[in-house]
Length: 125
Image: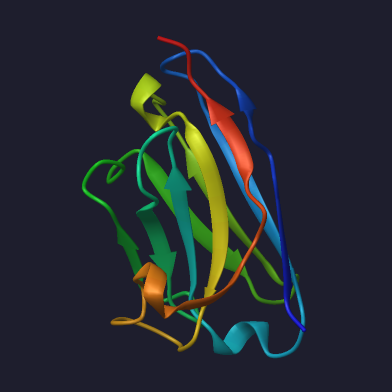
C-alpha cells in the first residue's frame, strides 16, 4: 500500500515563499513519476508540476512556471515543491500524487493512482 503525506503548507504574504514536502511510503518509489496538483475553493483540481521517476524531467503549468520548482529525493522517498513569489491566486489545497508510470505522458490527474490528503496554502490578497 502506498501512502502520501503532504506537509509545509501555511499562510504567507504575497511575494513570499513556501516549500511543500510529500513523504511517500510503499515500494518502488523511484519507479514512478510524481506530481503536485491543487484545488481552490469552487474550482476544479488543476495540475501544478510533475517530475519523472529518476528526476531528470520536470513539467510545470504555465501559471507556476518560473516560480515553482519540483524536486525529488529517491533515497528518502520524498518529493518537494518550492514555491516563490506566491500570489493570491495560488491559494488552494495542494495535493501530492503518484503516477502509474515513470515519465512524460503520465502527468494528468487521470494518470495518478495514489493521492495524499492535501495541505492548505493561503496567500491573502
